[in-house]
Length: 337
Image 1 (spheres, rainbow, N blue to C red):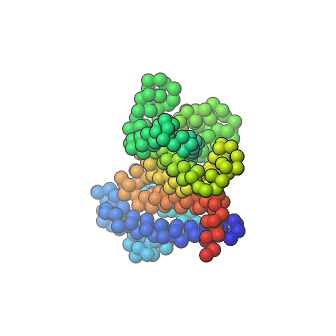
Image 2 (image 1 turned 60 degrees about the vertical axis):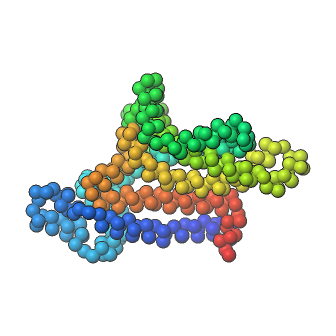
Image 3 (image 1 turned 45 degrees about the vertical axis):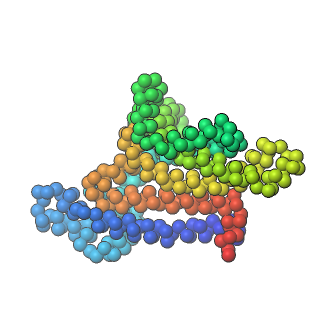
């Protein structure tokens, strides 16, 4: 199978997954305890007013009809009205999602940039000091609670040293274009805003990156060692090719395919982990919006946030599948069988 056909089939395979996910999320949200209309109007509202709001929200229709109406609206950019903000959920998500996307993307970038070299160094020095130090770091990285690390970093770098801000997203925001402060500040050539956005991102992004960084380092190390013990590597060594050239030209590319899977899974995991980090760092992202929606039983907002989280997870896995096929052509040919 050609690479273009492989990419096309991978994109098509995501559609039924998204439909199944949307059905699951929608039906689960509908069986949550409590009447959203009653919660929206308050305990003193009359039964007639509650019934009228239920009719407006379509809650008196059969669940399957509600789902079909929701999906029809979804394709037109209508995700229903949030009972918390009284705005369309789609508009709320467009406003809040860029902050979360920027946070998890920078966090994953840090995790990859630090985790892969750590894994390579550990793999090249198996059972030596560097390897043991790397494994110790990986152990602490996955075992330390994120909120505890966040508080420690705030105490150290914000309150004692005063190097970085403890909370918030930016001092003075540039004109909103994409909602991504780093990008918007560069577009506006406002470098003071860019430095401020970067400084505010440093602590929450590093906290978020710690666990996936440990995962990536651990997977890179084990894949690197496994690949280095294969026969073709020994053949290259006996032919006189330098060890560093073998490691970076042949072994790294083959072993990186397994690491990609971990990166995709961790990227989806990060958007869930961001809920806690955003609260600790007062980060104005989608996670705080989602927590408020859950506490208020705002079903349209709950469905919208969960759907976006699921969609990010699907897209991340799809991208990694495509990259997996690029790095290892056997995957593409295996799909034809």
